[in-house]
Length: 182
Image 1 (cartoon, rainbow, N blue to C red):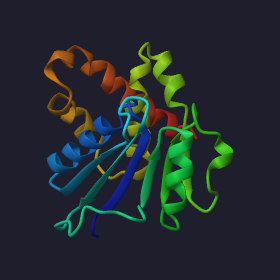
Image 2: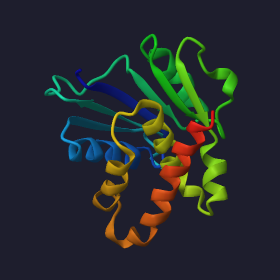
Image 3: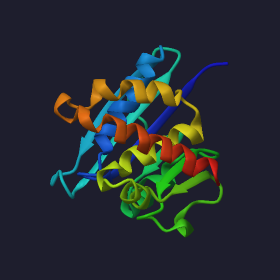
Image 4: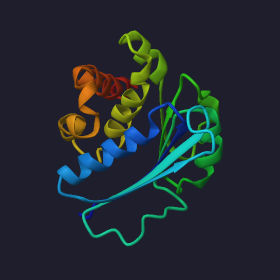
């Protein structure tokens, strides 16, 4: 069975969208898959729009450009409104239900809302919402093992923040748990 998945990860600058994409890409590479990663920044950076595209395959990736993704992670309402209509029929959307109303989810898609901001706040660090959402995505899609993502954290997070690695791993696990209970 061949492996192929592409995802657009989108949100406001400062929500950790690029970190999510980078971590997913590194995790897939560590799992022996072929990967492309393209970040796209809005003009304002923090607070502006940000998105990235990650393509993961067991074959060489022909193009990193994705017009109609198989999957989407939407961290805020504007990202959900912009990118959800592009998701392929039968695709998967994981959205931050702390900032996106569940009623915006397209019922023809496999959608999973996770209150990423609320869960991150409960964990004691609101900046972990991105890891919660990524954990939910990993559980919803199964594209790479959760352990590969946790093992890749030190490669992606700058060394000066390595003291936060356990919190990041805990947030990933909370995202997985949040999807499992639905």
